Image 1: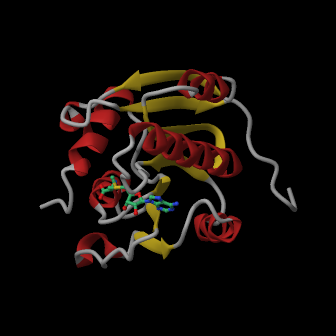
Image 2: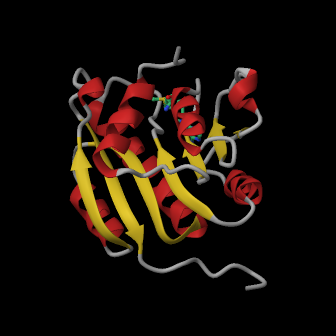
Image 3: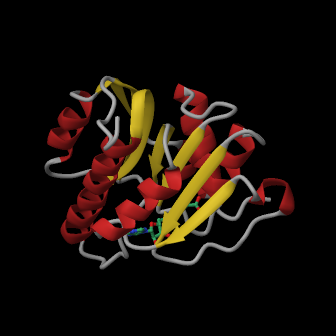
Length: 191
Ligand code: SAM
């Protein structure tokens, strides 16, 4: 079974816009407890790789998928964590997916601003990692400045689709942007 109900959200997002293929290298931001990692590892298959990062420790997986998954414990708002993720990804990345969410304060405007900040961090990381044609999925809480964020993502990808997966119906304020087809590749040192 899956470690989280969130696993079904990634399945729905992938059914909608096919972001993860066999053999892919995938980076999963805000990956604990690991439901998305399980789904991603199944989809990439034995030739694929998945890197997951979270503030929380992520427990190791069943033997059949564990060797495809590398986990990093760290804060994605810190540059040193982003550098570790870039090192772990080690080259071509096909998809960056982020389900990061802040600890809920209960005050929506604060939680929403924090969510948008995490989404922007995920976007920056995606721009550092994704090759041309790569895909990006990001969760954000609806609210001010989300349209601006979407517009910024749209500039870097062929198109962006917004969706609220059925599996997240009860958290109706969250939306996922699925950004397809990165337009330009990152410039890496040594290229
Ligand atoms: N997709 C996951 C799954 O299927 O198991 C569930 C992710 S959960 C909704 C959101 C995660 O974002 C939490 O585990 C939280 O620790 C993580 N998170 C929040 N802020 C973060 C940050 N600054 N850096 C890394 N992870 C963060």
